[in-house]
Length: 83
Image 1 (cartoon, rainbow, N blue to C red):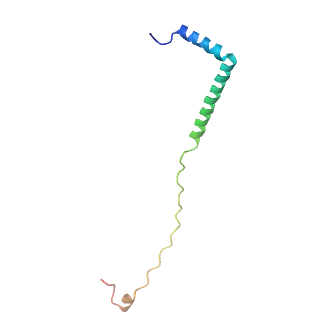
Image 2 (cartoon, rainbow, N blue to C red):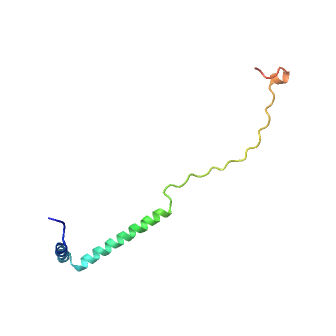
Image 3 (tube, rainbow, N blue to C red):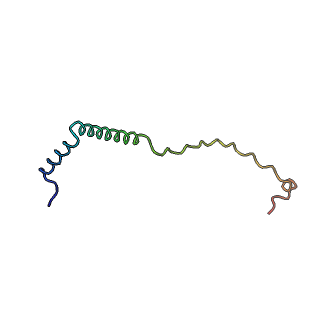
């Protein structure tokens, strides 16, 4: 009561060969190989391009120094800043 032994695998292979034929099995294996190759190429292409692009950098504009504030009417009258 174990798994499949070598004689069981040989009989299974012969049944599959009789059912599908040699040409159909080689065609299926060729399609399987092409699928694996395509999958590997897709994985390699995906690894080269990042999935998330970094956000764009915002360039800072040079800021000109601010002009001094105009004196208020109270400062011009000589009373000084209000406390």
